Image (cartoon, rainbow, N blue to C red):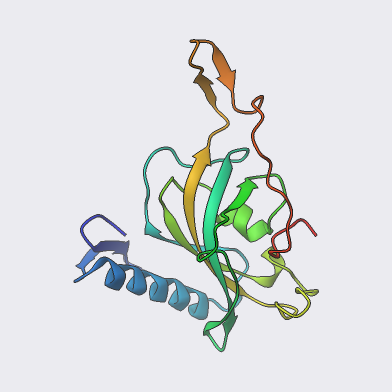
Length: 189
């Protein structure tokens, strides 16, 4: 997805294509469908499929960085989006997580790498990268493929930065709020 409602992609012959859409919504809906088509065309989904919907600004996040995200999660059923099983979009609280800490499913750890503040991404996560054979009682059936739309609202990078007194401080040493495992289904258990 590019600025001004463009999507750019390469085909199997490595030709570059650009499509301009009437609206941002049309461009992101198209991108979501491309991601679903990629999933449906692979014989076995062995890793996370990622599709940027909005690139965001600043530096891409890496392991150790802390994020606050808004998300919606769907079950992937009958080769398309099924029911929503979890979301914090209309809630007051964003999900706090530290990439690489193991507090969220492996598919998120992998799928959110490189995202930027303000970025939105579509993730299709195979069972082995989500909740596997056990699922989540009453919410996620065993061996479920999941689809997430995630938006990074805040970022705290691990890298060194300069404090107001001119001294170099590391965000690793600062008393940052840690992501608390909660009943939202993304805790380590």
